Image (tube, rainbow, N blue to C red; front, side):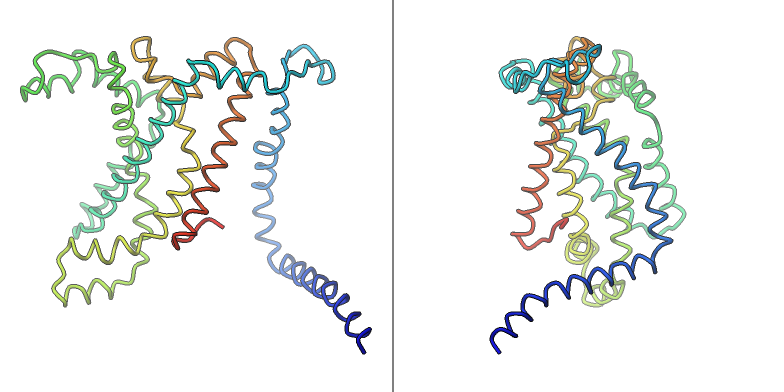
Length: 322
């Protein structure tokens, strides 16, 4: 009897695995149209996201383009040690973290605030006009957007004209020529360009809230601010948490185009981030190993931030990505 019980215990997991696999195949057959639709995306992810990981080997070599893989000289963590001991890279890392944190805070606050305000508009036509105007800058390339920002912040730009007209400043300021102003200016430019686009997902989350809650709150005498605080914001909480976790995963990636286009010799100490550093001192100087080492560093740190943020969110009972 005991022998039979032990035999059943050994067979049972195998039987369950077989049944689970058959059920999986049945689901695949019933959803083959969806699987075929996702196939191009899976191929794209493999080609552009996973296959290039093979290139990480360059970070551990003194890579020379003319040599084959077997002819490359392996140097271990030489390029990583250079990054962590180079004063310029440490300054670049500071700039990257500062720019990312400013963009993260301003991006979340402004996008959530604009979504709440748009949701309170009762005139449907005016609401669509506001949404359209706020979306438009997102569709401009950073080349065009940076040219507009540079023009507005120039000596004879509209910013100086307004500030001097209000007697806030006594003389014109070359805003992009003062390094200490760059982080704030970059954050403002990012908000202007992306705030409208970032509100889309929050407006979608708001639209899923049961309208009966608002009606009940009105009957109880709740003001608009109280309805936003006790109904709208809690209804958006899950979306906010997920987006926050995802954005924390990109905290080490502050961007490239705005910093590269708005940066100059006068503000380089504050504008140069990791991506610009890679271009200037890696690819431009044919030091591909150094550029790859910086890229590997970014990816590993981003993954760590993502895992930590997700774990912390789950421990706080706010859910997570997985």
